[in-house]
Length: 361
Image 1 (cartoon, one colour):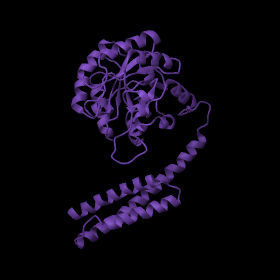
Image 2: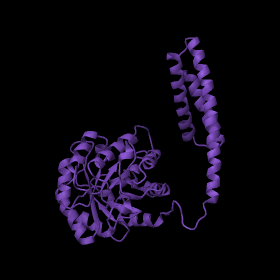
Image 3: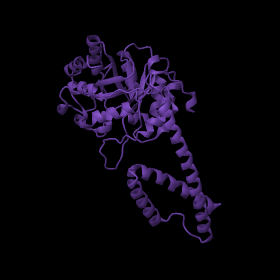
Image 4: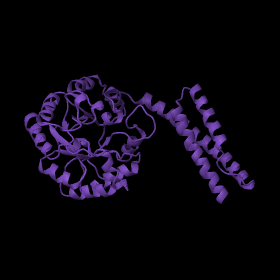
């Protein structure tokens, strides 16, 4: 389905101040006119192209701060008048869309909770027909690239072709260093399938802590992301929402100065050496595929044996032993438990599938 999605590259959006790397920054929530305008003035000369502020805040619990509402849109107008920065805010329903458009907001984005809801996405898409405002779509809260593409697709079918994606991480019940685990392979797959799609990273929401913003930002740039969205507040510890993940404008400027900006294909650099290395990797990949194929032949033989002897497919103790052994072998080869676990879990699932087919064949 995604081959029908037509998206303009960032440089073709026709907006002078929009270019790669794209930096979007501002407070998690608009709190007061003074806070909004003063923050924008401090950010103006840091390299930020787009000023962000949450006007309507979808909160997990009732009776918490849910944004100042439409009043904050007037403050964004002042920001644009006094700094020249483009303005952006999140919309979660049709009413928000109409009010943001009426107030002259330059860019809107759709949050993780909304992008996960096809009904809400369709309503927002319908409300945007005939108005080709740039729209960024945050990843759904669960790691589902199809759901992410579906949200983008609904906007595109409504005539929006200036669409970008924001990677803000994925919710998890597991203990993690991050507020929302990155699962970098999901945005990488999204970019593979939609090459023109501008992809930016939101390290504030991934990390959940200001101490992680710099390293996450560098990781995203190293993966050739098109930019960053970072939450900035003049007094982060006193912020009305998400205080722990916000930084001062000065800290943001220092992070930008510390980042290393690399090129996908630098000019005047020979690609012969890297192409030779890639060729060797391709050969190893071919050998891996052959080995996995041979392994699956033995799996099928085991499946036939289990069928003949009326045995269950899943042998939990065997799997636990296999995973533990391979993780140890992987560590000896300087491979992380994450990659060994992911590879062998995928192989194990395929083995179960093949044996199940044999038992029911």
